[in-house]
Amino acid sequence: MAEAVPVRCPACQRENGYISPVFPCACGSPVTPPLDPAAAPLPLTHRTWQDSWVTVRCGACGRESEWPHPEVGCGSCGTVVLVPVLPPEPPASAVEEEPGAGAGAESGAPGAGSGVRRDGGPSGPVPAGAASRSPGPAGAAGGRGRGPASRPPFRPVTIRTARDAVATAALYLRWLGFRDVRQPDGVPIPSAAVDLRAPGVVAQVDPTTAPAGLRAVECVWLNGLTASATSVYFALAGYTEEARSRADDLGIPLFVMDLTGMPQPLNDPADALVGRGA
Image 1 (cartoon, one colour):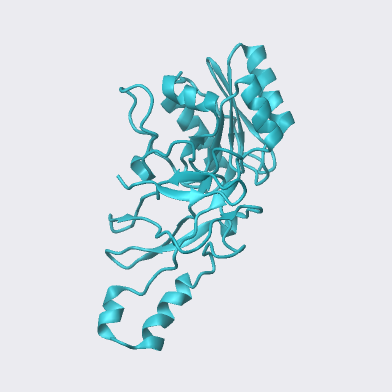
Image 2: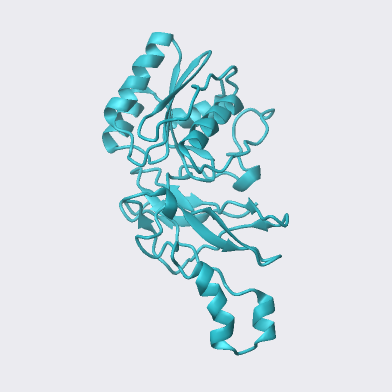
């Protein structure tokens, strides 16, 4: 397993551990977005779906694919931080065929990965924050490495749509041990949060690009209180400070999801829920 890389939050200067996710290339080889240690992390201030992906070249077959842009949620202030990524380099074969050729060898690489989605500027924003409080294994085999010993690793599903976000939250609740998770029928409305319910839990999934606010957290708490169930909140864009503070007071587990499909606990109640399960 790769080691965690420290990523300093530009808002509060806290260092958060981050482990690069591992994606499966079409050829079967593992692909990891190459982080750029020389570039400064940037806070995510605006997110769009089309700019939430980064081009990564497979070192085995040279194929270029788009994968979710790395990001990490600060465990102290809640800021979602974009982790800088290097643009794709020319395939090794192209360099060997034309040694020292500048224009020919480089014209292909910048074309597909010239930094259009690179994290070096505002054109590379990514979605909701990944883990920060205690990084776990990354990628398809990832989990937080916590919880009952009998629990298998959580296998994330890449989030590309609002429906994917809801499906991911449902899968994660089942992984925690909640059974018969009920998912609403139909396609989720991108501008609205979605309820998930199961015996013992009431969850709210917010697939929007705006941080969840105080009222949303209080509403899911009231729904859980009415149902005598645990209230849980999942958000792609994180939470406002007021929402985080209120959730801590009420004991509501907050999770933030990134586009790799790995929900990450953002407060102590969430850590406790992951540790004990359903």
